[in-house]
Each structure stands twice: as C-alpha cells, then as structure tokens.
Image (cartoon, rainbow, N blue to C red; front, top):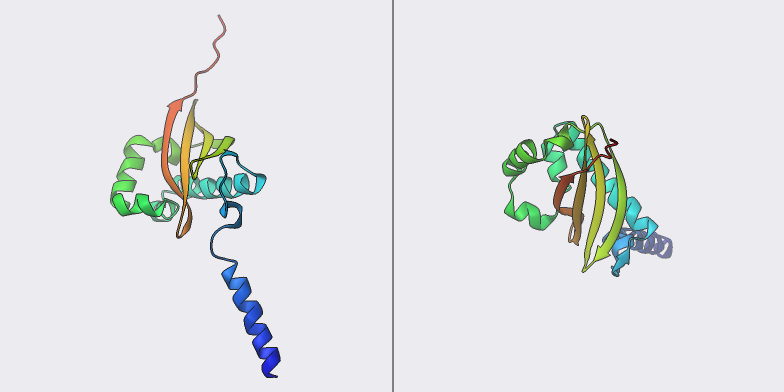
Length: 148
C-alpha cells in the first residue's frame, strides 16, 4: 500500500513539474517559430485581443509580460489602449503572418481590421517566470492597392 501511494505521488509530482515553463519555449533559438510556438503565440494574442474587444481590460492586461506590468499599471494600460490602440477594441477581425524568434524574444506580425482600415501590428513577446507575455505592440496602417 505504501509503495502504491508513493508511486501515485511520484507520478503526480512529475506531472506538476512539467506544467512550469511552456514546452515550446523551453529552448529559444533564433529563426522562424516552430509550429508549436506559432500556435501558443497566436492563442496568447487571440485571447488578449478577445478581452480587449470585450473591453475587459483587466483580463487583457493579464496577457502582458511581467516586466510590462511592473512599469505600466492597469489604469495606464486601459488609457493607452483607448487613446492609441482603439482599433484593437473595435476590430472586425485579425490574422497572423510572420513569427520569428530573435534574441530570446518572439516577434509576431498581426493584421488587424478595423472599419475599412487594416493595421499591421508588430508584437514582441517574452518568456518570463509566469510564462509567455506581451512586452510591446507597435503598428502602422496597411497601404491599400489603388488602381488608376
């Protein structure tokens, strides 16, 4: 009975230890993201944008990197989003393009549609103690092809 209980505890501990750092990011190497990394990054950004679209800034903020949260409060985050990144709140869709690992950061391009305008976002994500987190996002409008 003692051996069986010990075996169950050992298996449980192994499972719990495996839940720490996200597996796709255990060893970051510069270059294109692996399919597992792409999936995790896309899920992370999708969740954050989803909460922003719901105006649930508290949950959206939880997807920011620890180092971002140490410098920017929740209230500041909400103010920045409302003033400079309203297209994320008002988005009508988004899609992912290039994903690359560079110097222990993940760079993900996201095309966000808002009204009649598309924006190309450049997300920078990092792996910290709590896992994957958005460190920054910058954007520019996407130029539309015009025929004359």
